[in-house]
Image 1 (cartoon, rainbow, N blue to C red):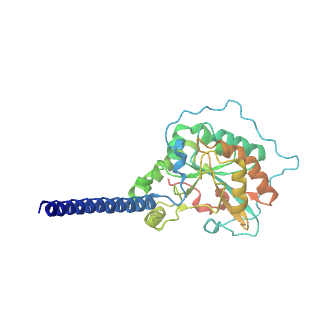
Image 2 (image 1 turned 135 degrees about the horizontal axis):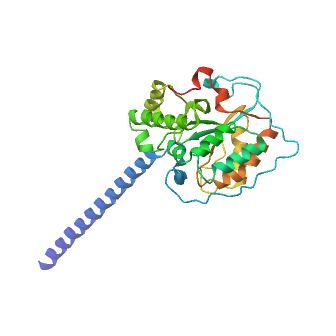
Image 3 (image 1 turned 30 degrees about the horizontal axis):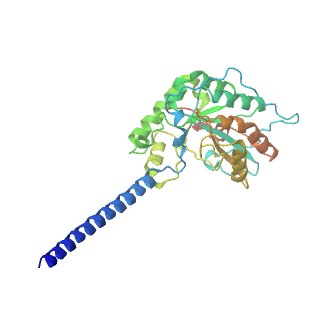
Length: 300
C-alpha cells in the first residue's frame, strides 16, 4: 500500500513539474514573440539612429587644419541646363543630375571638412539640418549658405517617438527648426523641404506626411546613398561601391549621406564619390534648383 501511495504521489509531483515547465516554456515563447513584434514595429525604414552622437552632446576634437583634396587637373564641374519641378525630382530629365544631400549636421568636427571638400571641387550640396545643431553651430550654417549650399529641414529633435506620435509635435518641431534656420541664415538660404528621420517609407507615417502640407512643406527621401548609416566607420571602398550600385541606371540621383559627428569616413570617401559621379556624366545641383520659385521661401 505504501508503495502504491508513494508511486501515485511521485506521479502527481512529476505531473506538476511537467506542467510548470511547460507553462514557463510557453511564457518564454510568448515574450519572445511579443519582443520581436515590438522591435519590428519600432525599427525605422532606414536606421540612422546609430548616428547617435549627432543628437547627444559628444566631445569630439575640432580639426585645426583640414587637408584639402586636390581635384584631378582636368576636373571641371558642370552645371545643369534645365529647370526641374520638385514634385518630379527623380529621373525627370535625360540629363544626369546628382543632388548631394547630407543629414544631421551641422557638427563641429565633420561639417567643416565636408564643406572643404565641396569647395575644393566647386560642388554645391544640400544639408538637411537638425535645428538644435544649427543653434549650437550657427557659424557653420552661415558658412554653408555663404559658399552656395542650401539648408533644408530634418527636424529639431530627431526624436522618433515624439515625431511619429500624432501630428501636433512634428509640425511644431519643424516650425521651430525653420525659425532657427531663417534667423541664422535668412530665407534665401533655406528651402521648405522636410526629410523624415528614417525616411517616409512606412504607411504609418501617412498622417505626418499629410500634416506637412498644412504648414507649407514638401518632403523628400532619396533614391541613392553611400550607406554611411549602415554601420560605424563604413569604409571608403564600401561607400563607393554603394554609390555605384544605387546610382546605376538612375538619371536624377538624390544621394543620402551624413555629416553627423561620427562620420569621418564619409569625409574620406567624398572626393572619390564626387569624382566617380563626375566621370559618369552627372552634374551637381542643390534642392533650391529643383524647387518651384514660389516654394523656396520660409513662412513669414
